Length: 262
Image (tube, rainbow, N blue to C red; front, side, top):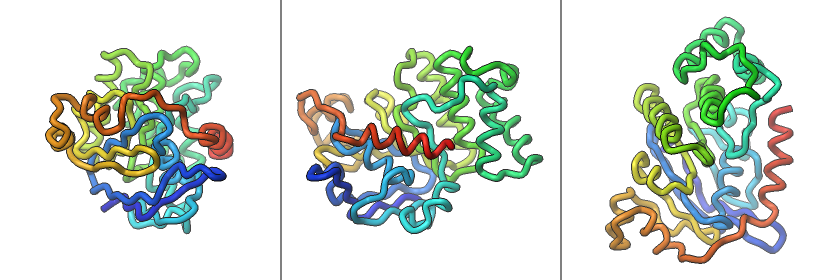
């Protein structure tokens, strides 16, 4: 297993955002982590990607203990945040270059990899343009390319297609699936678009009220709930009520993200 989570717990004061959860992800898998707002999804991802320390429990990424060796763990994964994290005042190439320097990738290798990735996401011809002039879909493609620059074993995607039109969403997922197939990269993603999870995920875990409700293939999830769509199965498992976001988690993430990119 490339991701192993055991008895993971995180609290914000008296509020338990993640409550003793355990799950695993196989190497090379496309894994969807689903849950309504406030379910514990965001907090879990922050712990997996070293942005938060758990109260208790263990996280292993590619054989590395995330709590004990956060810096080494960061070299094992790339991440595309839900909120934009590119520097709009830099060009596409400069954003990639800066990321490569942060990861201490030697210049020759860095430049070769930047060229490969920008061509892969069809942005090589736009490499000298300022990112502030890019469309939402172009920025997402650049963020994915940047997240792959240091040859990670795992790619974390937090709502990677949020706010994009259906054509662009389909385009982004075609890149991600090709990466998974050609480079064997493990993909761990969250989404509120249930049809995306149904279409691309091999396994789905549903979290609610801080606990993992179920982990299964999308087809099995639909069979267990007697529903025709993953969205209907998701609502059956988590209820119909509108949820608030996890208390205190979003502000904390923004502060840690600023530190991450310094």
